[in-house]
Length: 113
Image (cartoon, rainbow, N blue to C red; front, side):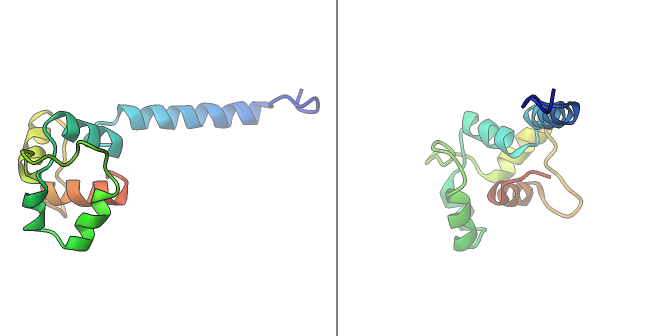
């Protein structure tokens, strides 16, 4: 019983709901962890290509939020990665943003939309 230090039904319901949310996030191919992992597994991003298009402060922020292996000297550009993702059924286009910008800013902010 709850009085004896046990968990009540509301506690179990909260835990169950949190588990369902976490599982949905793991299953979502557009989630930040899944997109970052996919990019690393598929050759990473060439930093030199980003320096031509994005502000240094934005790049600095992004560099601190991604794992080792994300940046590769022979990596690809975000446009190429976004095209590959779309081809594989991982939509990265939004009405407001081009695919590459969606990837860049979503990873940098820590959430995918």
